[in-house]
Image (cartoon, rainbow, N blue to C red; front, side, top):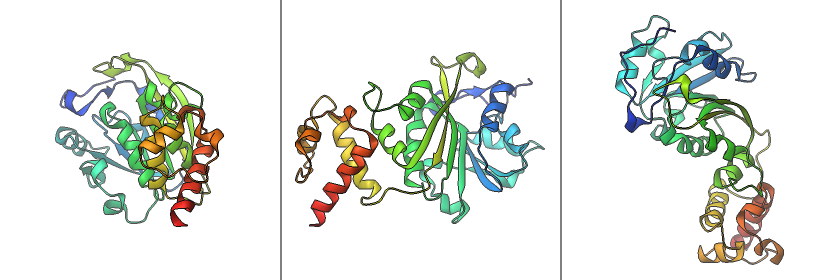
Length: 264
């Protein structure tokens, strides 16, 4: 594959450019039933994933990158419509700024140093993001899909699994990137659940889950108490558990009880 040298991978941006057509094709093929939907590729870099995404005639593709060099490179390609290339920071741009109220699928070989923040931003924008397909550090992808009781189960596991169905699709070795990262990568697909759970706000659930996992060695009773979260109405069996022992559903129930108590 001809590789463009006009864009240098920048360490401070966490860039590792994909240099393998087969892997790029597999990621592009992993978008599920996106018919007619807008897809926003985050961090297109040299365009390795952009090309197979463009070949899908069932989507409208946009790309956003914070790296000026990548933007200039993409806009110079005859295969990429330059008006669909946004120079900007996905984390600080409301989706509504470019897409109004449209539904937008998020896709990309995500820069490692912001991949968790991309997931938090997706959760905040979930009413507009029906699906996400992306490449993460393997451990981040595994954490998102992990079940309660697992050592890697954490804040993102609970929050993502509350609002999205998550699926770990495949593992990608370091040597398909330029420069090769020190770790393996994993491709993840998130599909928004048809019904959003009721009885609590996302921000409220997030506060409880963060409090619980920030002191994951403590029981829920001590972790919540030290975060000044009221314990009325919560059964003592739950309060005796540690955060990693509670399923996403158990956290949702906790959020409902605490929110009801606060409103009482």
